[in-house]
Length: 147
View 1 (cartoon, rainbow, N blue to C red):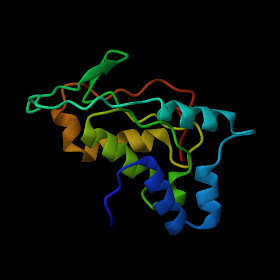
View 2 (view 1 turned 90 degrees about the horizontal axis):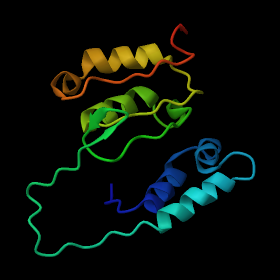
View 3 (view 1 turned 180 degrees about the vertical axis):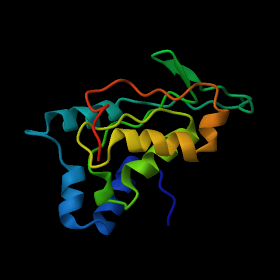
View 4 (view 1 turned 60 degrees about the horizontal axis):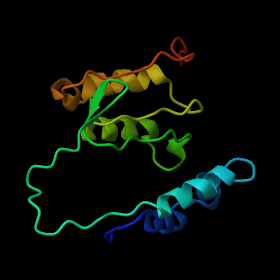
């Protein structure tokens, strides 16, 4: 796979690899797609200031969100129907968030039950045992839902 340097390149690869119906689902927004356009516009306003001749060997990007320490100020936003793009879907995303030391926000519309994701991350990911923060799973209306 070629080196991907921005979100637009991810989108082009997804369009090539995913079935049209699946790509269209992920690439679209709700109703008139106003929020989708606003999100894209917001990303164009983010600029990085190059740092030259600065010691970057000990950079600490940790921060806290709702009292929980995370490794960087980046979290995974809710995305429904992830299994349409990959067989492991939300499970793989939860493992990736855990390994990166950050938070995955689960969609309220996903085919896997929240309890299964929580159980999978807590029992299979050694990173969770070594991380400073305990895993945070908010109480939700889905707490008692079973498969």
